[in-house]
Image 1 (cartoon, helix red, strand yellow):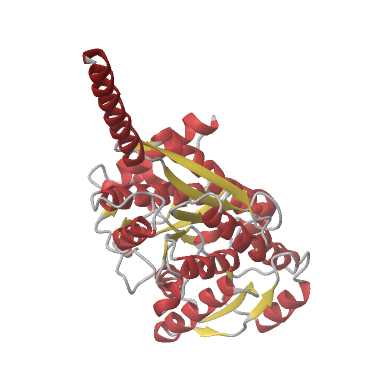
Image 2 (image 1 turned 180 degrees about the vertical axis):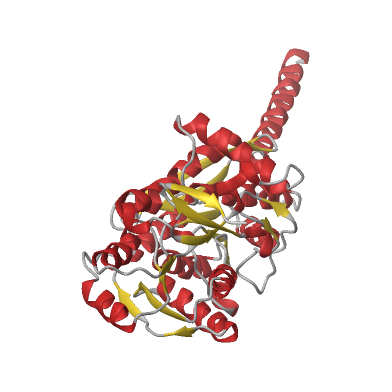
Length: 389
């Protein structure tokens, strides 16, 4: 009888220990992150660097508070419909708590709709903006078009530009840049003489460029990105255009430089400080994290970074790590609606988070977190981006 009683007591202890272990296992559930990028299609010249940036992020830190971070990655093939479908699959089947993505603005906006519907945070690595409640579950890391365009317009004014021609994508990014240019150019005394557009998949912009050249503007600026963004500059060079050429931060990648060749020599564009990190003062906080990023990128990819896009993914990871740590402090468990809400609230209340492109400050009513510290102007000289004082 004593033996049976002791057996029952031991069994009870074992059951209790098993329950505690199970509870401990539940408390230490892995964190899950969904990552969508464009590894194929016309936006892949951006999407592939984004993937390399994610590899650098994982090399930098792949756990948080004793929990492993699982990454679920899918290719959207540069298609917004596929991007939205990928997001839904990640949320419904893989149970991710956040999505980082994607390479193009149309795709990011498509994901934002799913994020809002499912109440899942989205960290957009493409320039995308939705006002009010439509964008309540997203933040955007790339610097907003008005902030970057104003830096370009300031440079135009100093150079004596009086008229500027515009050509951009016939999508959300093209609209964002043109709208920002309209707001900055007028007060600077610069007249916009054209608003030409083309699709990312187009193979020629000859017709649009002929119209611009006929107007003889002092300068031309584009609202484009990646390798498709080289088309206007190639066409301008073919037509013998000799005015100043400008672009946006979405052009800072080696494929654009390769495809543009001599046609993009002398191009001026705004970009994040990470591109010229070694030229920043030692006391600048962006310098240290940018050099850490370069080391992690080298470790993960076997070569140094040569683009601006991979650093956005790295910054998205820094933002996620910072916010997830604060969300976990609420005792909400990953994989639950409570945790996703806590994570969203932590993301949109981020203060002074130092990244490679910016020192980020977010507000619940503002999609962007960058300020003037997030921009420098660079010039393309012999295939290399050089800081313009």
